[in-house]
Image 1 (cartoon, helix red, strand yellow):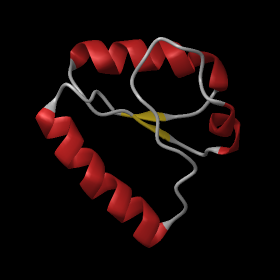
Image 2: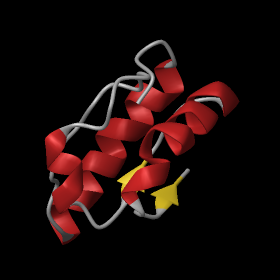
Image 3: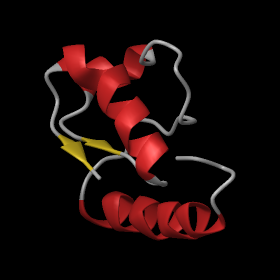
Image 4: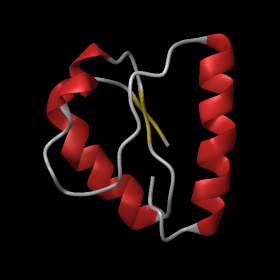
Length: 71
C-alpha cells in the first residue's frame, strides 16, 4: 500500500478486515522497490493499493514470485 494515498490507506483497512474475516493475512508491507518480504513466499495472492505508479512498481516487484496480483 502507498501510505501517501489517503484512499489507499482507507481501502487497505477495509481489505485487511475482509481478508482476516474470510481467510488468512500473511503480511502487510509498504509499496517500495525493495525485494519482496520473506513472508510473501507463503502467500496465495498479492493485493496492491494505490495509483498507477504503485500498481506498476508492485507488479515489477512481485513478478518473479509467480503470485497473482490483485490491483
